[in-house]
Amino acid sequence: MFTDSKLNERSNQTEIVKPKTEEEKMKSKSVLIEGYQSVIDNGRNHSVVTDLPKGTNLGASALELTVMSLAGCISTIFKTTAEKMRLNVDKVEVDMDAEKGNDTISKVTYKVHVKSDASDEQLRKCLDLTLKNCPVGVLFEKAGVEIEGKLEKV
Image 1 (cartoon, helix red, strand yellow):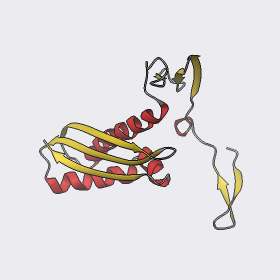
Image 2 (tube, rainbow, N blue to C red):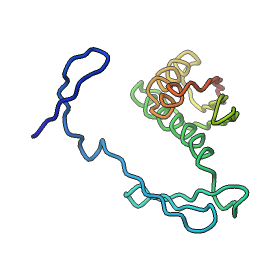
Image 3 (spheres, one colour):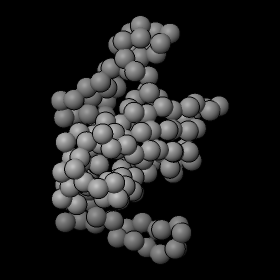
Image 4 (spheres, rainbow, N blue to C red):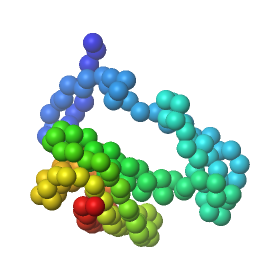
């Protein structure tokens, strides 16, 4: 296996960089169809349509898609975290609202509705771990988006 090295600007030390496995790589291809409508594919036979309301409005905007991705990430990571904690979770639903600032998303508020026989404390811990491990949420945090949420047991 070949490795590369790169200079870590923070520590000023050389790091060994391992080649990414296929599971660590992601692909995306976007093709503008007409107007503002694009079909975006991930190379694994999954496609979505993006569009603008002022276009044909046949799909979510790219910015709306990022908010949808965050909601989806929270629900799936919550479920996987609950399984690791051996919590029974019958249903997870994430309602999310986002506010757009000058250029992009500035604030997100969400409510996670969970149907489970787990205690409130266990579900709160599960949500805390979820938020630390949700890769889309990490991107939002690094971008400076304010994120507020609530957990509701149903």
